[in-house]
Length: 190
Image 1 (cartoon, one colour):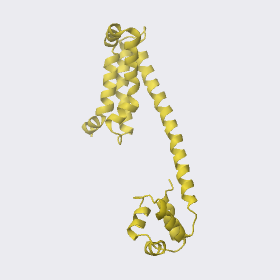
Image 2 (cartoon, one colour):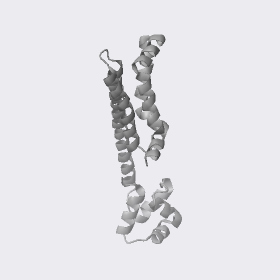
Image 3 (cartoon, one colour):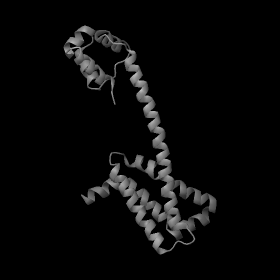
Image 4 (tube, helix red, strand yellow):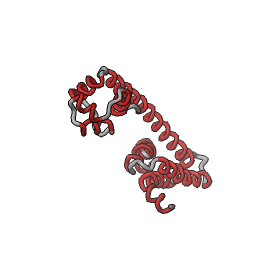
């Protein structure tokens, strides 16, 4: 990503100026220039105008970059949302098929139990920087919705009995638990 601070550094160096000279020319505090170039602050309004005048550039080159980055972030947000929905549907379908199907036997239910541990474990392995709640909301919400739909469609009493009898609740609790407590599991392994 090409931020405003990075662009200011590039333009300043191409003009042969150091930070002190830019601060003098633009009448902006040296510390402010340093913060902007380190991407600690984003210049707005008068500060950006003063720096642009000192560097003899048009202010619009920065606003176009900001708009481009914003449109890229909206696009990636939509793609990530679609990906998460499809991933949740896939997890729901696999675990539901392996546990609730009329032909489900002990082998398929064991497979569902193993998948309920290993799929979330690898999700945790690749998303260690996420908070546990964020991980559960992104990757475990499908299972919670699936259980809710089961209870609504089958009726509470029949749905609850079916979920316990087939192992769907056990698989769902295991998946959500691994998603939430995955970092603790990783610490035990290391």
